Image 1 (tube, rainbow, N blue to C red):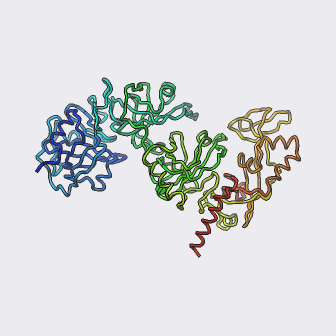
Image 2: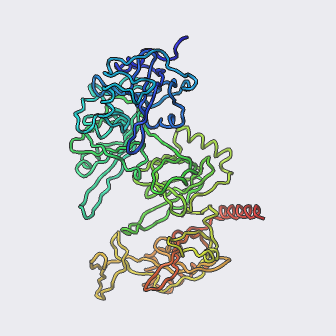
Length: 613
C-alpha cells in the first residue's frame, strides 16, 4: 500500500528546500505552558524521518482542543516556516494546516521514521513523546522558552545567530543579503532579528505632561504574512521616524525592544509589542513584496459583544443601518470641544450596536445607501448597554473589497433591511431605536431612575414647556480648554480663578434650566453648551449679543423655545450638596424628531403589546 505521506519532506525542509504542502503524520504532541497562552510541540513524521521540534501556531490551538489533531493524525502543512537556532537545532513552526485523516482512523505509525542527523537529537518515542527523551532533547526543552511561535535560549545563554525560512508556496523571505524573520516568531529572548512588514496604520503624534515629565509618541501597526505587531516610538525616536513612516509601504525593521503587549489597547493578535530605541533601524523595502497583505481583520459577530468586557479592543463589521447627526461635546478633563457622530451597525446575528465616530471622521462620514463599515481595533464600552467607540489606533473602511463585506451587502438587500434586530446600545445621535432605552417621564419617576450608585440614562420624546431666563448665560474664560465663569473686577477686566489670569476678553456660555413635558409627566432638566444652543435655536454668542444690546429680542429668543418637541437623551443621578440630596437630570443629547423613524418605533411597540395581549 502506498503511503500518503510526503517521503523525504522533513529532511528537505530542514535543509532549506521548499516543499509545497507536504503531508506529514503527527506521532505525538505535548502542551508547553506560557504565562499568556499554551503552545503545542509536535513530533512529525514523513514516514522516512521525523522531527520533534515542530511548534503549532497559537491560532491553531483549537484543533488540538477540539481533538481535530490527535495522535497518528495525517495533516497537510499549508503554510509553515523553519527557524534555525543553530546548525544542530531547527524549529518548524506551523501556521496553517489541513487535517487529511483523523488519528483514530489511521490508528498507528506509518513507515519506520528516524531522526535526521541535522537536528542533533534522537526522536522521542511515539509511545511517550514527553518522557522518553534523549539527553539532547531534554536539554533543549529545559533551556528554551516558547512564547511567540518559536523557542529560543533563555537570557543566561548566548544564542547563536538565527536565520529563518518562510514557506507559503514560495521561497525564503529574504531581500538581497538580508535574511528576515516572520513577525510571529519574534520574542523578547532574541537579540538580533530583522522583519519585513507593511505599515497598515499610523497614529498621530500624541503628547503627555504629568508629574513624571512630558513627552510625545506615535505608534504604527506592522503586518507580514505570518501576523502583525504594534510598534511605538517615543520622544527622539518619534521625531526620527514619524516623517519616514508611510501607511501601506513596506519596511525592513531591526534592533527594537520587545515586551508583553497590553490587550486593553490593541486588538492585534500578538502577545508582544515593539518599542523603538536609538539602535532601531527602519529602511524602505525597495523590491516588490507581493505576498504581504494590506490589512488583517478578526471580526466577531455583533451579538457576541455582550460577552466581551468593557475596554476590550475588537474588530467588527456591519451594515450602517442609521447615522445620527454630528454633535459637539465637551471633554471634562480639559473642557475641549469635540465633534462626534453615532452610527448604528447591524449584521447577520440580528443584533445592532452603536459606534461613535470622532472629529473629522464624524463630520465627513456619509451613511446614505447603508454602506458596509469594517472597523479594526474599536473599543468596547458598557456605557448605556454595549457600545463601540473609535480610538486613536482604530481603522475604518467603508465598503471594503473583502468577502465578509460582499456577503453582508447581499444579506441586507435580501432580508436584513426588513429584519427586526436587537439593539445592544442606547445611542446618542439622531433617533434611538432601542425600545428598552425609551421611558416616559412618569416611568422614569416610578422606576426611581437615578437613585442607584450609578447614573441612569434613558431617551424620551418631550416638549419644552418652560425655559428659565434667569442666569442662563454667563461670561466664561476665553481660553480654548477652559469654560470657567469669570469674576468681573469692575475695571474692564475679568479674572479666571482656574487659569489664575486677568483678561479683557470673554466668551458667552449657556447653562439652561428647562421644564420638559410628555403626555405622562414633567421633568426639570439642565442643558449645557451645544445642547443648550440647539434647544434655544441660537448660539451662545448670538444670545449674549441680544442680552447686552437688545434685551427684548433676547427674551423673545428664549420664549420661542417653548412647545418645541425633540428626542432627548437624559442622564439622571441623585447628588448631594450641603448635606441635601436631590435628583439631578441633565441633557446628554438633543435631536429633532425623525417622524418616520419614530412612527416605526411606535408600530414596533404596538406589535410587542399585541404579543402580550
